[in-house]
Structure formats: C-alpha cells, structure tokens
Length: 551
Image (cartoon, rainbow, N blue to C red; front, top):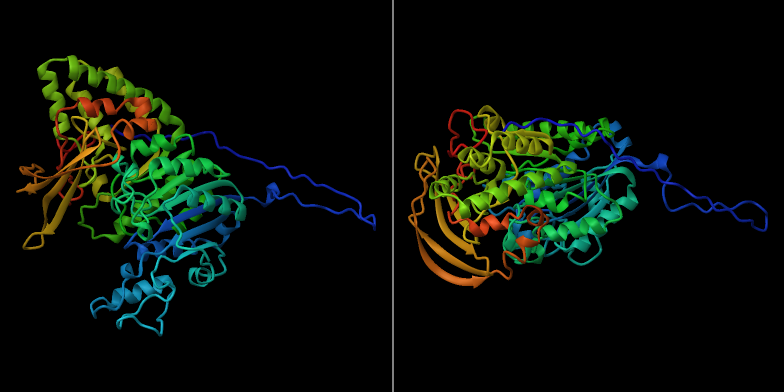
C-alpha cells in the first residue's frame, strides 16, 4: 500500500492569564505580587524536553546528539528552548585506553564529551573525569546557547543518588521541571536510548536485557514499560504535542495506541535506528521555522535525519532504516478497521475451509519480521498480504477503506535510500504469535570467510506461553539461507515463568482492547516466519515490494 502524505489542519494553541494582586503599604505605594504563571508573551514557541541515557554503549553517539542541540542557527534559540537530562553508562562501558588500537576512538569519545584526563588512573587506564567511581552520573540543565555542553554539564550534575530512569516518577518529575524552567506553547518530548518495540514479557520482567525502552544499566537494566510510560506522561503538568522516540523499533502499533490520547504526534522508527540517531540541530531549526505548523516542521526534520543516516554509511550498504510521523487523531479509525479485519480473519480460520486456512498459514509463514530477536512484524504488509490471499473475505472496497485509514495516520515517512530504491514501504509493527505464545530469539551474525556477506545463525529460542510459563530451546543447525528459508531443529532446555499471562499483559493494552488482536495469537496455529531480512543485511529482491518481499 502506498502511503500518502496527509496534513493535519488544526493546531492547538494555549494562552495563560496573569492575575495581578495589589495592596497598600505604609507608604501607600502599590505592591505588585507576580503570578507564578508566565505572561503569554514570555512563552517560548516550543520547548524540547530531552530524556535519555547511554544504555551501555550509546554515550558517544548520544553526546554527539546533545552537542547538536547547541549547533542550531542562532536565531532559532529565540523561540525554541531546550531542557535535557542525561545519564551516563557505567565506567566499564565508557571507552578507555585499554590498548593502542582503542586510543583513537577513546580520544574522539573524550573530545565529544568535553572530558579530559584525570591525574588518577585505575589499573593504568584513563577514565572520563566527569564520572563518579561507578559511573552513572546524571546531569540536568537548560541549554544556554552562549555556552557549550562541556561547560554546562560540568556544573549541572544532580546532587542526588543514582537516578533511576526506569521509573515513571523520574520522567514525570523531569517533564514538570522542564515545563517550569522553559514554559512554552508547545512541547516536544524526546526519549533516547536503545529501544526495543513492544514485548509483553518486558511489561513484567524488569531485568530482561537492553532491548527495551530506557533500560537503566545502573538499575539492573530495569526499563520503562509501555504502561509506565503512559502513566508518567499522563501525570505530568503539561501535555507534550510530540513524542519522539530516538530509539530502535518503537514504531509499534501497541505503543501508538497506548499513547494516542496523550499527544498529537508520535515520531518513531519501525526498524533499528542507526548509530548517529537524531539530527538535533536540524530539529531545532525546523521547529523554529515552522512552530505553528508541526506537520511541516516534523516532515522536514525526518527528511534531514534519514538523509544523514545515508551519509553516515557506505553507498553500497543495505541500510534498513526509516522514520515516521503519525498523527494520533486518526488512530481511532484505524482501530475500527483493524477490528473488522481481525474479526473476519478469526472467523475464517475457525469456520472456513481447509484451503482457506492453508492460504492464511502461508501468509503467516512469510510474515515480514522487523527484528531478529523480538516477535515484531510489519502489520500493514501482513494485513494486505492476507487480504490478497482471501479476496472472498476482504473485497476491494474493504481493502481500499483500510488503506485509507492507514494512510490517514501518516503525516510523513522517510526511509534510507536503499529501501527507497526498492520501493520498500515501512509500516507499524505488531506482536505476532501462534497457539497463544510469542517468542524471543537469540541470533548470531558473523561475516563469511571472504567478508562479502553475513552468516546468520539462530542459537536459542524461548516460547512465552499464554498461561505464563516459558519453554526454552537450543537450536540445532539453525542457519539461514540467503533466500530466507530456515531449516532447524529444537532441543529442549528448560521450563520457567515470565510472571505474566497473555490476557493479563497483552490483553490489557489499549490496542488489544480495541482490536482484539490477542484472539488471533490464540487461534493461529502456524509459527510466524523467524527470518529477519534486515538484521542479516540480506538483499531485497527486485520488483514492487510494497506488500511483502517474502511472498
């Protein structure tokens, strides 16, 4: 399905009233007591609220992003204010002089951080002076364009214990602090870390791994779940107009619906975000130049960001990257259409013919996976492929109505040049499973002998069952062919629990309450495709790939 750029006409504005109270003193001169709320004319057009952490190995990239916030056009800071809170990784994760080979990279990292050599060394290695003995230092500041990140951050460390970025209160408190320090007509909230899309087990397993949103290395990689994120934003004193995930795999339908009533726009990527992440000087300039037209400002920004990723990688690199702006006002209609699609799919699978079930299974067997480990699949490709396979169930009118409802949600989308050249559209992802379970996989990618391609091997798989148990397996002969076919056997390892059930976790999402998608996870008997083309850097086939390159 081809996506059409849509324009949201309505722009919300807010005004604040100031009340002046007077009284008489002995000298009979009026005493003016200022209202704590700012005058409307003192409001910035936009305040950027940045909340991020290094996440084990992201410090170098994210410090570069924060420095970009200082590099916008001088005039942009007249109407765009910036508040940031950033937490470093542990000292073990910060590059250091462990070898001559690492010296150049370390110097670059130290320069980006504005750090310098400490006279005291540990085991002959130099560490960043900003770090406390265990690392995990956190700074909070309001950007002053006349200074630098180095100078401001060095004087802005929080005098509190190790900040836990994975708690809703931490995020709520920072949003409120930023709004007090930089009141504005509009707010853009940036959440920056690894990311990992929506995984039901991550809602209850707080120590899984880094493949989650805002996984705090200083707190056993506890992460901010989808429900906690929604609760943190809802509790804040301001409503962000934009939520921007500068993090991998966050353009999921589950997150879109969980936050749809808490913001006007969501900016996110379906595939992994390349190392350079956002292009924040461009973001500041775009917001400054079109503060009253967020559709235009965000579209221009994501175009700059996507092109910057292409410049970062070699021209022949098979880069799977994307960035999408969603208008949340249109998600309700998409939910209605997805409910109708799911109703028909479940009914056909239960009450249809064997031949229809075979066609449905074939589509599931070739579903487009967007991450090699988590069970995230391209939902529009899956739905459009299913509708083509079942024309007697989904007529042309239904297909077109669904396509319109999907396209209406998209303000803009840009992909890497490689995907653009192959006409490869990118859509929201969704959790897909079978027989009531979903899976988590461990995949290894290694270059072949002549360094011309990657060999992709599936090593372990864990089934998260609907009743809350888990079954883990070692994979035997789990190597994928370049065509994406997988032939492997499983060797049982152990049984455990994941502290939740499909109904108590996924069934409580806003998306499932509207669409009833978990019904399909229960009914479906065909294991979804486990091959992820993007993670293996596999070639895309020639031709029109709008619907599904695997079929």
